[in-house]
Image 1 (cartoon, rainbow, N blue to C red):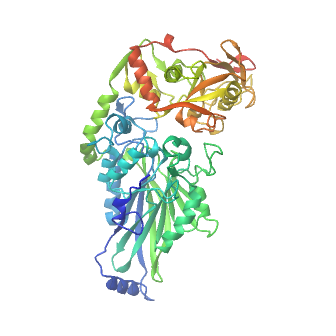
Image 2 (cartoon, one colour; image 1 turned 180 degrees about the horizontal axis):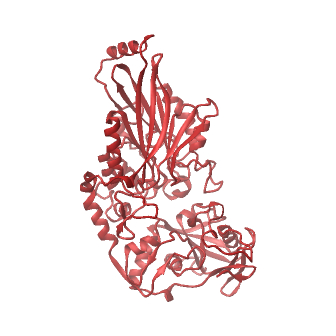
Image 3 (cartoon, one colour; image 1 turned 45 degrees about the horizontal axis):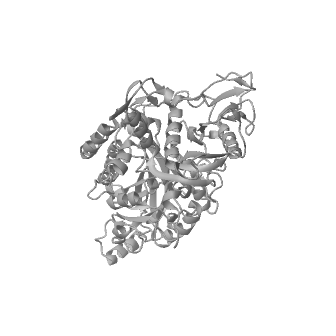
Length: 605
């Protein structure tokens, strides 16, 4: 795969990333003289205050707008979203601190997540000849980001889209652990360096930013990256690069990591690397001052982690996703013995709901936003009844059956005329949203998009009855064990051991009970196919999304199962096509009661 680093190599052949040097006009001799004078015994200590700002997991949120509801975004916590708000906060900080004394970073997941990003990847793609500039590139260029780490969702639309986005950015996309699969050399700039001139001191403060991304990309976007890119662990690559940055004269080392801080992984043991490794990096790798954390979609104003080798405290911060928060690392430095030393680091957050949109961003991207609003409001059919996901976590909901029906129909058509055409096709789907609704009456693209919020594609796998039984048992671990005589609180019934909703699967075409009075591993009861007990040797074609097919969620057997077919069209698009072809969305065409919750054989509901 060709590397696309030329733009930043022009700036620095040494780093492979851009190096902006403030105050470079000063002659080296004069700088040396200033530095010597500043270091002379008896002189007052020189001090410098640097503020590093950070966002993460923007996921295509430019404005405070909910495309699925066609309205201003609102939640119970009063949050506001969007880069237009972040721009206002950044302008405030730069006014307070002095723009020369600030740095603006992001920790990844930028170009996927809203109909806006889908539109410019698929409907009016940036990769087309003469295509548009991505709105996220336009916004982040205008705000003046210095560097952005790669997130796993950067790879969702393929390498070509990512490289085009990279070429449109005025800042480097960093990924020290995104390497060429054959040479193991960096496929993206590993780091970014910038020097800050301090008046009266000939030695500038040199800041290095190391970018690290998520090793789970090797699983989640296997179809795009296998054989092209590899993703070693964050700890391993940080240990390689941080000493290099220090040897190059970095006074401050910041890590921008698209990796949470919990030390856990959601994909089991399929790769030998930790998904949420940011705190591990702080503990294990000496020489880091602060880490901008991403990926986990949680709010961490300030987390202090002690490095095991040096005893030094490393400060971590994760701003809330979707541009709802801005992290500030306030770094105090002092000039001692001819060099700058970090004296203290403090992290805090600023809230996007405290400010208004930056009118400059509104003017810049108002037309792009309006195009997407028009697109998602296109009518594709009519629903005979209201369909909702409100109870879909714990009751078999027709709205999820719509997803499995579409997947079954697409796979059956794809396998027609093949040796697998005679096998029964079943499908999985997850209750992604707790608030999605397709109202009775006109059905729009945004209604269907709110049902299937991810850009997953469809894969057909060959599975046996025994494997599907194990698959269902694993899925049923989602429910909290509940005694037969206990009061059922639906708010506490699910998400056992932190299992997210998107890692609970319905399976269509089979009939089964989930006995939540039983311990995990012994919950699937009365499992039948076409009215008869499931034959463990029976073969099925299993229609699954690419996240699950590649091992996402660590469901048993599916990742290693034989792949019969796959495609690049999003499941969301297939749903829209299905509804458009039908014209009328009637539950009798797709709804079925396949499963129910029980306790010792008695239905819970």
